[in-house]
Image (cartoon, rainbow, N blue to C red; front, side, top):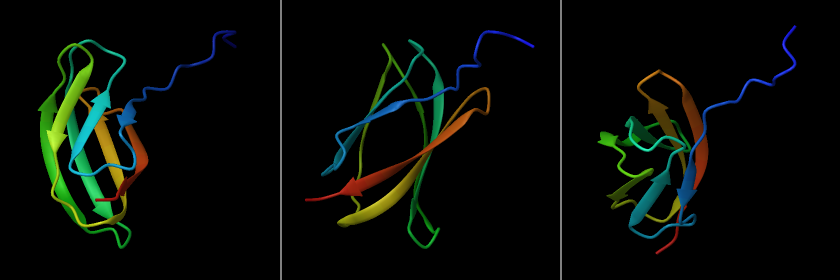
Length: 88
């Protein structure tokens, strides 16, 4: 049994609530990310691939006000899902 706890891959999401731009801050200086945003019914409303540079990926969104789930997957197929609020 290992005494070192396994560190789960994660990212930070700013701002949240957002208006029209999202910034993902990763723990690695450069990595490829697949971003999938779903509405509360599970429908995919946005999906794209991005490369982070200097720990940051920034992209624009044109979603209506509401709550969403954003799933972010890295190239090692590690993923995290976060709640995303859009408030314009």
